[in-house]
Image 1 (tube, rainbow, N blue to C red):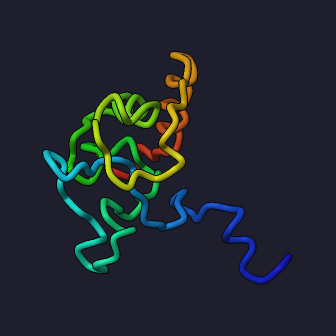
Image 2 (cartoon, rainbow, N blue to C red; image 1 turned 90 degrees about the vertical axis):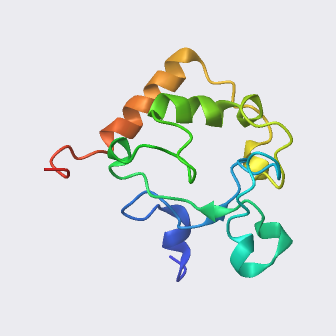
Length: 124
């Protein structure tokens, strides 16, 4: 295996690559936290925030950098089609431009998967 390639094909222990991404929660109006741009002054960083880990995600509500969602179900609904929640999103990651069009079962399965990443003993 080529040096450094392992990290590119596997998530770390917290299920993240520790990247900065714009998930569509910046429109310059009611959602105006510019994120990483405040520190870099790079226009490509407008609306980007560090991607959090997923380990114990069921214990970390509220969700998103601004706390706008209180359940994992709401988060999954958001990612299924961010444009239903935020109009005129600026600089959104290209991975989120098209709706995922998840079925009700797929959404439920995704929430159950996220719950499976949670250690209920962690909070005790």
